[in-house]
Image 1 (cartoon, rainbow, N blue to C red):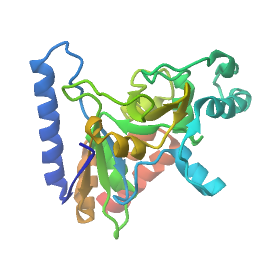
Image 2: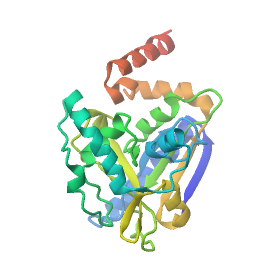
Image 3: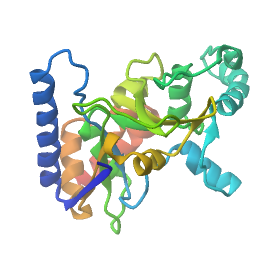
Length: 273
């Protein structure tokens, strides 16, 4: 299947398409109770439709080390992350287990990562991670798409569906995208944003690697159901107004004083001017 690109769409057109897909997913779930193969869509908003699906780890390596990330050994990544734990625990109220490398023995093909709470915390606070963050709400994704977009660029909402009526197949070792971390005891932003995450894993001679999401789609497009809804940038004012009326705002999604001030600035200088 690969990536299906739709649009540019106006705000109301986009809502119609997203709701239509959600209704179909719900119909399939209801018609096949307990089957476990019909999953809902998850959504990711990006302020520039030309941006690829890149994790913060990929972007960090490109920016700081000057080369593309083709794959990153999982044990190596956890080793870097473990070195940050003493500082995290000392300077915040967290108490993460600092002995994560000793705990990390192997990873099975289910894609279950250890210490997911730490990974989610790192993702929400700026440490580069191999995860892409998504939301169960397309309204939340729309906010992230529109809120920082500029006048010259169309934003986009990406949609991903892991299970779609058939079990996925792959050649041994090929990269595959899986969802992780819906139910995690971590930072409140995770629940404010109705977060979910995807990670792309591959295997080579018994060693697991974090791999760019695009690799899985290139190698095995039939087992990665993904859509990209390109949004007409001219509908940004209408969309932001609607989202604000639903309390999908900077403050409701982040809960910080900085996000409160951003919300108040938009409310008083744009909506109430």
